[in-house]
Length: 185
Length: 171
Image (cartoon, rainbow over all chains, first blue to last red; front, top):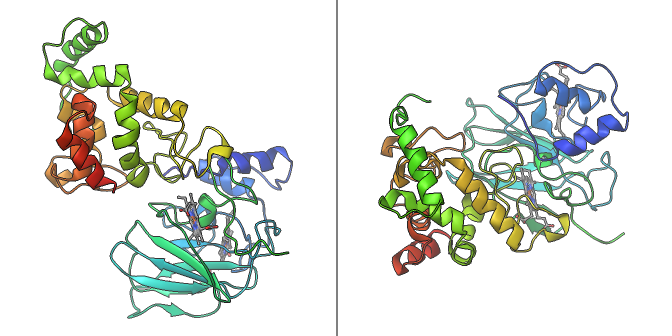
């Protein structure tokens, strides 16, 4: 399955900027993973701002775990990629009517994994939410922190990574900016 | 061709000839060929009012047909844009024209209106549709979005019923 993200042009841009360490693999997935660089792989706080499912999907998961929805939430649009906001709520509701809420971890990351042995959603540690059902797309999403809430008006139809569409601090022709809460400095 | 898909063998050459005739404006003996005329003439007024909202709601998101590489590539308010400053605004004239052109290019050889991929792909496989990575969006041909796109391909969504179903599909 070919993974082509709207933010791909930006990723390609990163290569040009020479931020790539290591070799470029053969498949488009390998190439994308390589383009994203090699950053402290192996923990839930790594690679904030990146499209997690590029390496953590059921089809292709060199990252080990397969997530169904995952991403990074920020306080401000201009914050650096690495400085997501901890403790934000990400509230998701799928087409089947299941609602589940993840809390972000120290780098602002959250990830949702399906575990059919469960009866109800379970948040083990900040960032990691397990749900008992495979979510049915399209999915509605909103985020909240300290009483500030923001809803995404449109729906997520297929793309499980927030960063599949939310990339960097500015919108572009094929993406919107990162998910953020406030203009205040 | 996926199993269960329509055959396109012998009829194809004829369809191409008819399409060429229709494009050249040589009469329109077959109702089916009107879809090509609609696309060729643009019918942009009706498209913008009745069809674009339906496409924007359920087809043109950034993770579906709002991706540059898709065979059916659609511009929309919150989806793919020709210019980043347009984000959040309704589709521009140029974007609407590009959407119409993309629809026209999707399946120029379809042997009938109902056989056009624009209608077959989102239609549930059980109802005679074709496998669609984006899933079965319409349970059957009674879905207002199906009827809306059908009305546009047929006659530019120029009739009251067609316009009403389009409004129903994207209130």
